Length: 404
Ligand code: AMP
Ligand code: MG
Image 1 (tube, protein in one colour):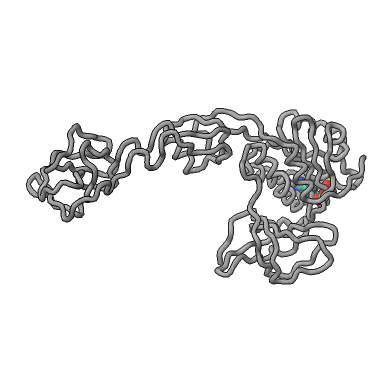
Image 2 (cartoon, protein in one colour):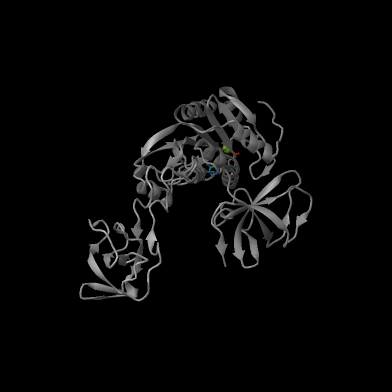
């Protein structure tokens, strides 16, 4: 097996992104496109509103009409236009959302009027354009309303419906095969005899993949046996766009993933100056992408966050690949690691005077509880010293901010 020089987090991230490109696109009904990334811009073929619409329940009038009383010609409700024009001395009762009748150039709200025997009396004159949403004011005809890379959420899907767009071209979601390796592993619902550990990485990584927009599928648990792992790695790369394995990338005698990836493809790096997550391995096998994540549950999740998630987003055409990084104030002392950047798990709390990081406790790479409730990975630069409480550090926000 090759030996791997330890590369920086930045170099590792750049190498990965240089080797993944958006997958193909597919056309989907808008109703099935929630959460997808648009592959093409969307233009409005029609203006919105499609007609001059009343924004009030009231009377459509002529603003310059000096008549003290106006004869009410009829009523227009939303969806029920009237074939009648407003002329001086007249008005038409109109409801919110209804098209303004010809002639009228203002709507006076009902609260400023009084009806008397077929006539309406205005408390004050209407201003031209009052209480009207003019045709095309919300969306102009031909306007680009969504750029490629837009994520289809509630507002975007509403917009598509407004414009009568029933089908969209979106990027395909990556299929991601997830394999756990280790002789000690048993399924989560199984009893664990002495020496055994339940496989927590697979459910954990599959959830993270889903959150990142991928379609995970399980390859199960592979024993630390070359033939077994070779078969499953090949199967995963055959069926999926991305293979994510966990475990078996360290220097132990039963760590087989690195040589296997070398055998089937090109390994770009196998060691990153990151704590936790040092043995992270990245390979390409033709168009397919493989990540060998470390076995420790926190290491695998942290390296997923930092390296795999942005790659999955790039495959899906996201414009923004990375989570936001913000500056926070340490609420506790942090000992630095001499040779590696550390991503410490913390809860970042918003207070009126700024963002504060509260540690999630013991930061050992086996302790999943350090990840539970964490909404940030604190970027602790390598060094020999201690960062005292009060120091400002960068934090990668991996969850919602908390307020106190
Ligand atoms: P490895 O990288 O295979 O040497 O594994 C490092 C540590 O992570 C060991 O303590 C393993 O038992 C543990 N580990 C590996 N895979 C998993 C997994 N899928 N679920 C939980 N723990 C794991
Ligand atoms: Mg192992």
